[in-house]
Amino acid sequence: MIARWSWIGLALAALSGCGRDERPEAASPPPAAGDGGRGRVVFLGTSLTAGLGLDPGQAYPALIQRKIDSAGLPFTAINAGVSGETSAGARRRIDWLMREPAAVLVIETGANDGLRGLDPDSLEANIQAVIDRARRQQPPPRIVLVGMQALPNYGIGYARRFKAVYPELAKRNRIPLVPFLLQGVAGVDSLNQADMLHPTAAGQRRVAETVWPVLERVLKGSA
Image 1: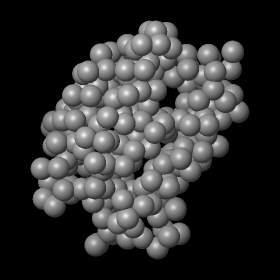
Image 2: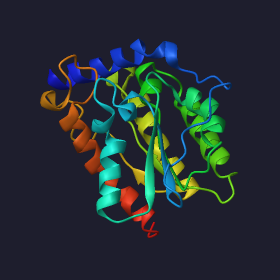
Image 3: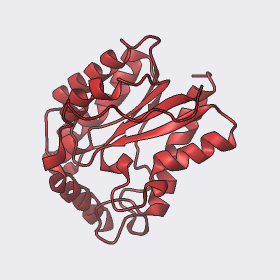
Image 4: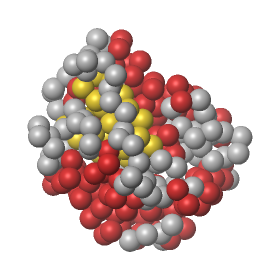
């Protein structure tokens, strides 16, 4: 029952944010790193990355920044999460995000696609387009892909197709993969907020622990 309501909460989160699916092209440029010579680690994501319902410092990109600093690495984390965004929205937004060069691009998208039952083939095409656009930057950023899983509501076949998109893209593009962003968080009542819509601060800490080992290897140039 806990798992069921956690996933339903995420579905409601997606629907509540669906009106904010696009970023206007006329918007001001994304923030620069702020520290001369430090590479930008851009976290392209949904409300799960934005940390909706929490202080910005409790979202996992901010927690990753602390790990970066503790490791003595010259990078600045940029939280580019937008609530309710689908992979199509990420595809539309990537040009805007790449106006400032990124050293690393972390791609977290697809949760809202799965919650709405959108075609996994479209998800794959949209993420591939994001990767292709990012790689047109000179020099191209290193890319980390973050996996997501779909609700079982649309059938086992759909869930399998959806889940398979991420390792297939990672293999095809030779990029590191975080298999599942919400590993150890989805379905755990104590790690989700009281409204059952988003991870708690403790849940975000667990997410950071999931992402960091993969990202750390990339930042250190060993991936």
